[in-house]
Image 1 (cartoon, protein in one colour):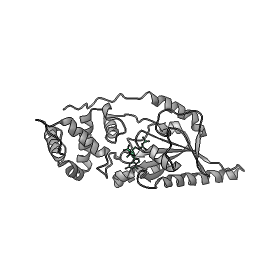
Image 2 (cartoon, protein in one colour):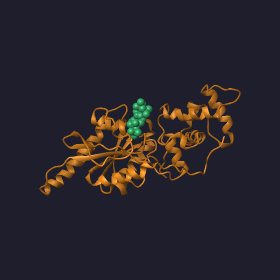
Image 3 (cartoon, helix red, strand yellow):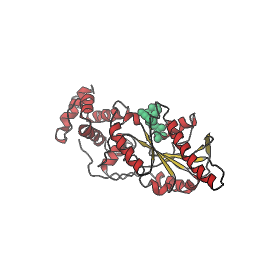
Image 4 (cartoon, protein in one colour):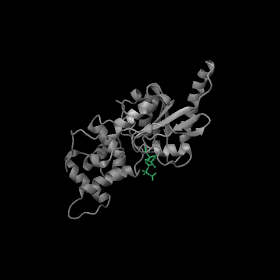
Length: 287
Ligand code: G4P
C-alpha cells in the first residue's frame, strides 16, 4: 500500500472561478449570506476568502450535521467564530426542525436593520438571503426545509444565474434561487484528507488508502474508543498498517481471497463515516 503523502492536490474545478465571479456580481443585492459548513470539520469545510467575496453582508454560519459531531470540540469553533462577529447556528437539517433557527436569526437581523431604516424614514425591507457552502454539507436539505418543499435546481448545481429569481419564505425573508456551491481550498494534504473523509471532495481525487488511513489516524489520535469499537484496533501505527488492515478485514467480515483486499478494507473504513455509522467525531482542532 502506498500513500500519496506530500503530494498536494491539484484539483480545482473550472466552475469555481465562474461561481465566485457570479456571486460577486449579485452580492450587492444580498442582505444575508447563509454559509453552511460540516460540524465535523468546522475549519476545513469553510470557504477560504469568503469575507472578501461577501464583503459587509451579514453572515450566518450554519453548523450543519451537528448530530454527527463531537459537540465539545465543535462548540469551541462556535465560540471562536461567534467572537469573530459571526452569527452561528447549530443544525441537524436531516432529522430536525433546526432550520427554523436560521429563519429566526434572519428575522432578528432584519428587525435590527429595519429599525435603522425606520430612523432614516426608510420603509422596512425583506432580507434577500443566499445559501452557500462547499459540496455535500447539506445546503439542499436546508433549502428544501426552509422552502417547505423540494426545489429542483436550487442549491446543487454550479454556476449562478444572473437573473435573480427569489422564493418568498415569509414576510421578512426571501431566498435567492442560486446554487451557491463553492469549493474549498486545499491548503495542505491534511485539510484535503479531512474533506475527503467527510465526502466533500470525491474519493477518486485522492488515493483511497490515504483517506482510509487518515480516518484511522484521526480516530486513533482523538477517538480511540471509537477506533476500538468500530474497527477492533487499539491504535493506528504506520509501521503496522498491513496487520491493522488484516484485523479490520476480519472484524468487518470482508471476504479474503487468499490475501486481504486492502482496497475493500479502505472503502469499508470510508463508508463507515459516509454512512454515518460513527457519530461524535470532529477532526478540526483549535490550536
Ligand atoms: P449539498 O446540497 O450541500 O450538496 O448537500 P445535501 O443537502 O445534498 O446533503 C448531503 C447529504 O447529507 C445527504 O445525504 C443529506 O441527507 C445529508 N444531510 C444533510 N444535512 C444533514 C444533517 O444535518 N445531519 C445528517 N446526519 N445528515 C445530513 P445523502 O446520503 O447524500 O442522501 P439522503 O440520505 O438524503 O438520501
